[in-house]
Amino acid sequence: MMFLIWQSLYLLAPAYLANMSATLASKLKILPQPLDHNKKIITNYFLGPGKTYGGTLTAMLLALAAVALQSWLFNFDFFRRLSVIDYAQTNWLILGILSGLGAVGGDIVASFFKRRLHLPSGTMAPFLDQWDFIIGYFLLISLTVSLSRPIIMAALVLTLILHPLSNLAAYWLKLKKVWW
Image (tube, rainbow, N blue to C red; front, side, top):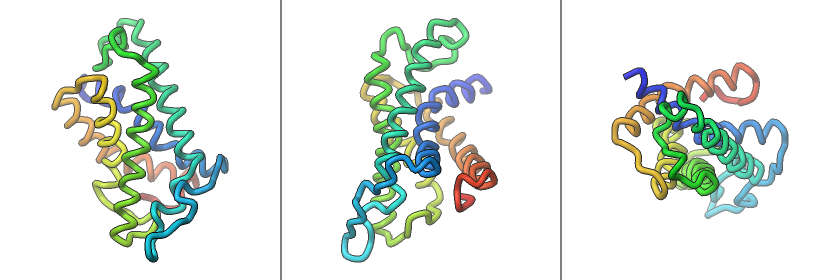
């Protein structure tokens, strides 16, 4: 069971880094322009000001870097056993692009639906906020790799625990304005 948890965490590293990157991009003021250019559908933003070009680009780059590192680490026996992805049979560049697109895309899709539900940017949406980027990540990487049901379930449960904890840490470090 413990090994499954470590495998899940290792698998999720690119998605977690991509998801955290929006906060980093915001703090560093990297391309802060909103993806939706502040356009609205009736009275609600299309996505909201929190979805920026900088956050998207940073998410893509960090996910790609994480996959590149995991691909290199696959040369070492410990990481080969830990990885649920066979990097010897997987194009790391394609996987890295899909990882970033999936994680950031899942978050963007969730923002679109949150705006349709008239939830302002930054409003807490339990489960959706924790799983949006993970589901997007899994959907896109599944185009190149196969994942077992136990690894997916472990990843979803771990994310329910780790996502709020990482948000609390970011709040305490004054990287986020809200604790969720």
